[in-house]
Image (cartoon, rainbow, N blue to C red; front, top):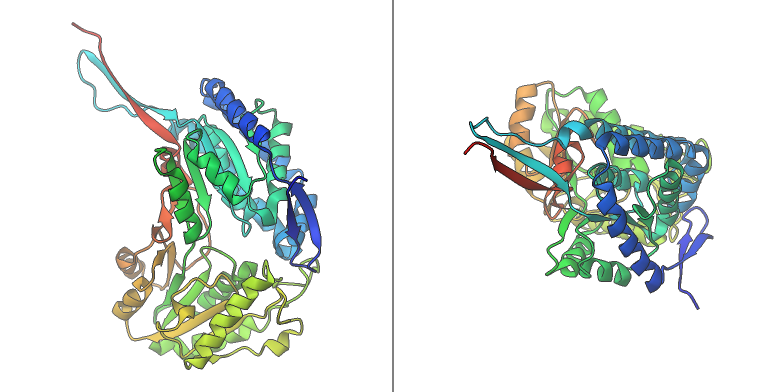
Length: 463
């Protein structure tokens, strides 16, 4: 009997969809077709690649009415926010298509008489994209569209929780008329994914997921010399300085902490506030948090849906309980949210004060609707605490002083520094991280460098 992958919906625990795992013959055919299609695609003009990629984006957007409730059923995001993911999908895709011609142009050094010299950017070959469930369209598009624009073939393996997203990508690519085999979507388990990576038949793997998952990618790729792009999560800090616009900081940091039920790699998980503003900030933050509506993601009034699984909620509840036992003070009464249901994915948000870095909630990734807030004396203390983490994806600084934000940002160990905003990817900038957050980069011109290899031409035409 064929093994099946099932989506257990966080909405009500029902099986929303199931699909069979790819069989070995299908995997072999996909790898062979990808290699053959890529060899031809590499010779296609960038303008033609852009036409087809743009058509694929259009085809995806045309499915928006179906995609939004489908997302809610698969991973729990409220329908009122579902369209935002597709807006971000379009923004990133359109940007990477628009800059491709320039980003992929040959690099030419200063002229040298009698020679023609340049560096050509050639596609890597076959790129495998392993995408997560929490932002299933956004994380996938970061690699899929640029990889195709750079002249590569793409094999997409989506998370089991959002495997229908992979089908949507395939439908969009087919509707756009991409060459047969150039883009493929496979339903795979971990062992099958590892076998493909270890086969030596893929040239680049872009993975978004856990640190353990990233380590598994490295082990699978060992000895193949395949490139690895790893985005492995974070424990992203915010620092509210004494000169910050408090109302703006509260509004945006509450959203940064609790959007998507806190299940964001670059969501705000810990906040440091200058002592002069601490009490006012905490009061405002807690008050705004209490305005969330916890409920079914299918209800239009819901602003906080369920977490993806009951086990994920149990983990976060455990972090909170451990912190409280160590002296943390919770500011939110879960009973006020009505639907907070222990043992299910439905979990009320929580704000903790009197926290410290001996508590797991301030050092280990939570990936849920909880945030700890600490008082700091000055910039130096804030920098020390922001850097006291094994992760480094983003850090946000809330201040009226641009020079101070740049100075502090320069001292923080992170991939992206924000000032007066958070939880956003600008496709014109590299999306990258440090420490256990991973390695490599997507988006921007830099993202194209990880999807191509340089080939130098040194041509002496005068003898």
